[in-house]
Each structure stands twice: as C-alpha cells, then as structure tokens.
Image (tube, rainbow, N blue to C red; front, side):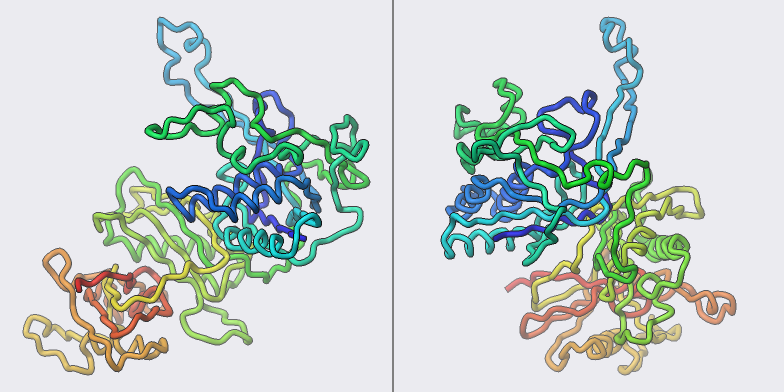
Length: 510
C-alpha cells in the first residue's frame, strides 16, 4: 500500500478540470486528479535528472500507479473563485473591431479552500514486494521536490504516510460490472484519471502519434493536444467517484471564508521562507539591515502576540540554544549591488500564524519612505535547505565584529590581536561548535576594499540613549578549513539576524 498526504500550507487548491474552459465551469476540480498527481511525480524526476531519458524505475512506478485507480480521504471544502480583469492594450486598434470591443479581459481562477490534509492511497495488491519497495522508494525520494500541485499558486507539500483515516471519509471510483465507469448524480463527481487498461507512462508528457524530430524541442503536451486537435491525452479517461456520505451538505462549507484547519496552534509548519523584493527602483545593498528590520517589525505587528520565532524575545521555558529564532537575510543579485530576495529561516520553526504574519507584510518603504519594496512569497520549506560541507566559506555581506576593535586607529593599523576581526570571527565559530584549530581566516578584497561601513541593528533601548553609533565597520573574510565543514548558522557577528555577516560557499583554485 502507498499513501500520499497532500498538505496545502495556504489552504487552497487551484486547478481547473482538464480541457475545460475556465469561463464556462462553475467549480474547481475536486477531488484532485490522479493524472495531475502522476504528472507532478514525473516532473519532479525530470527536474532531478535534467536532460536524461526516463529511467526504468520511473516508468515502472508511473505505470504501477497509473494502472490502479486510487481511493481518497477528503477534508471539508469550500468552492470559490477569484476574478481578475486584465487591461486590453490593443483595444484602441482601429483595424480590429474585436479588440476595440473589450477594454478589459475577464479571467476566472477557480479554487477549493481545504479544511485539512488530503490523502491518496493505492493498494498495489497486484505487485510483488520488490516492485512495491521500488515504487515507494522512488516516490519518497521525489516527494520533497514537489512544491505545488495544480496551478503554480497552489503551494503543496507531499509526503508518504503509513496510515490514513478510514471510514465514511473514503472516496472510491464508481464501478459497474467490475469496471470503473461514469455516473450522473448528486453523490458523484467526475475525476480525470489514467485509464487502467490503456495507460503508458510516456502518455504523461507526449502523444503516441506525435512525430518527433530529434533536432527540435518537443512540444508541450497541452500545446500538442491543441494543435492535433485531440481532446484528451492518450491513456487517460474520465471516471466518477462517489463522494462521502452526506455530500455535499456535511462536506461543503457554503461561505467565502476558508474552513479553519484543525491543527495545533503551536505546530511548526515551516523553517524556511523565501520572498522576492518587488520594487520599481532597485534596492541598494546598503539598505540590507533596514529592509530586514522593516520586515521583522511588520511581521511582529501582524502577529499581534509575543512570538519568540519572529522576535527572539519571550523565549519559552522549554527552549534552549542560541541563534534559533529567525534570521532575516536579504540577498543581492549577481552584480552584488541590489537586493532582490529576502530569506527568513529559523531553527525553532514557524507556526501557521507566524507564516501568515510574514505573508501579510505589505510594502517596505526604504530610503525615507519614498520607494516601496513589496515582499512576494516564492516558496515555503518545512526544513531549512541543506548546504553540502565545503572547505572554504566567504563573506556575502560584511562581518561586523561584536566588540569595537578599531578605536579610531584603523588607519594606523594598531589593533590588538584579541580584538581583531579575524580573532572575533574565530571565537564566533567556536561558540557555534565549529572546530577552528586548523582554520585559516583571511581578509578578501571586494570592490577594491576589505571593509565597509555598515548600518547595524540597534535595540530600541539603545537607540534612545544614543550610547552606540548605528554605523560600524564590517570586514569581508574567507575561512579555509583542512576538511569540508558545514557552518551551523547562515550569519555571524553583530546584526547577523538582520543580514550582516552572511557566509556562503566558495570554490578555491587548486
């Protein structure tokens, strides 16, 4: 048996029924299409193996799953839609009456607000133990690569489960004379599936009758079907699934607000988020700390309650460790001049409410409020992305030593060894549990300098006393280890939780 859990962190599943005009349908696809699910698994394999022909294990897995219609365990849902109007910039064309008729084009995006996780289960009773193990292993390896299901905004997390709820929640395909069939009735919904008697793994990405020239790029399946024309892909079919007892009265919530998910309020759902910084004017890297501070303050305001993960304050009694609350890490582009992304990560983890608070952050008005930079969520990861151990780490943003070290004598070079930036960085690594006996720490030159004057983060009680300047000298460093190591934190030193002192892997010449 193979059971997949589909979790939608945003609480929405976006998908239009296959081949139907979105403007002429009344509801989004539900239950989720097994055909889409197999395409997602195949896409994850091709993403992991770019440019490769499908492996024998992939073909085996897809055909094993495609030749059995799965059962579902569904939560309560609410059907809704979002309507958008796109400006028709060709509406003034004098030679095109059709364009001139409409100044705006209407788009409908249908979705299902889901109240909990969805389970999809295959029995795999016709397979031997070795084949079942191969199928389970391949799907388990690819599950983490699937970040959305349906439309691109339908963020999804996929995982393999050993058990799933049973009883009247199970949804099975309608059967007539021992064959799956379609039926019309209030208790049935049509689902787009692979046809168990005529499915081939390659049907997920190409037509059987397609003439392929190896010198040309292969057409996308949907475009190929439109050009053929061919209503449905090969090896696919529509079947009816009988919905749970009491459908739709007890299962469809008839209001606009999405059903509340029945989860613990303190349940951690993510450790890493990535945002794009959308702004008409590129944000200079000198605003690194300012952008991080504004995002953090807005997230804390949106949360409205004390949050250790977001602020680092109000530590729970049962939580130990340093630097386990959120790092707010603005990232610059390839030129190193402008900020384009903001990564937020925490070893402690974020709850659903904390994720919502960060997703609700509006415009970050930098440069005195003249220019708004809007953070747009790109991805949510349950675990912090793993970086492979390497022998060399280099500053992405300047490392600001925690203690003052120059005392206005930086030009004279009179700095005590115990206060030097290299020594303070070594101490920071040791406090983080990194072995530093053989590490070589040197300054690296970027933009004709090894240092930069940085704006640093000052707590509010320090800002009111004017006892510490908000500008400090940061140093660009490179740490070379005799053996590959992985740094436990993404940043070190003063204001490391606000983007300074970030270190990234670097390849040294051999």
